[in-house]
Amino acid sequence: MPVQLHLSPDPSAVAEDFSRFFFEALKDKDHFTVALSGGSTPKLLFKLWAEQYGTAIDWSKIRFFWGDERCVPPNHEESNYGMTKSLLFNHIDIPEENIHRVIGEADPEAEATRYADEISDNTDSEDGYPVFDLIILGMGGDGHTASIFPHEMELLEVERFCAVATHPESGQKRVILTGPVINRARSVAFLVTGASKVEKVSSILGGAADAKLYPAAHIQPTSGDLHWFLDEAAFQG
Ligand code: 6PG
Image (cartoon, rainbow, N blue to C red; front, side, top):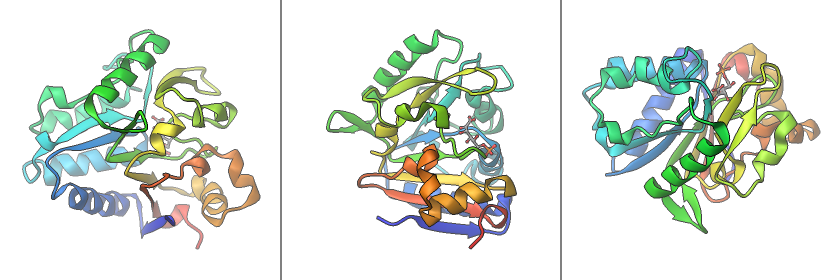
């Protein structure tokens, strides 16, 4: 299925546009599994959800996971779970058991194995792989996504559901969903904003030869749909 583009004037409008898409997808479902990402646009999104959708949504239908998590404790400023908790979970009515966080303070390899089991126990499956209803992704200026960086392209193909990735500069470990899991999702949505992303977005969406060097270009759901939510700064049409 071709990529579906959603263009908005600025990051706040991207968050609003994506929210409409998300809550529409949720409308007729009794149960919905979503993997969240870190990054700047999700921060806007979670604030918006807490402020505008806090009581309008039956949050108990949703099971939250993460596509990547930094290996730090939950109260650390770099924790994706911690960020989501302070901006969203603290302000909405959601059962604790619906929040499936990566235990960032645990041993990374052991946690990747444990988290894979937690995912398997709480999602649908197909060919032995978990299937998420939706995976939200960002893209870094180097083309990484879900903490799959260009120096670890093999994580796009490993057979494990979760693995340990390493940030190329800081060396920080991260527990991630691997390519085969991301590409089995029913829906994948990139939220990408800002001028620092414009070249990579243009290569990837334009199918340029260098795009294969960027992990984000390899996210092509096998039977699910692929959405890119972009602001004008990130997109050169
Ligand atoms: C993380 C991410 C990461 C992020 C991109 C884009 O936790 O670091 O999940 O993949 O989405 O780096 O981040 P920005 O939206 O802040 O540019």
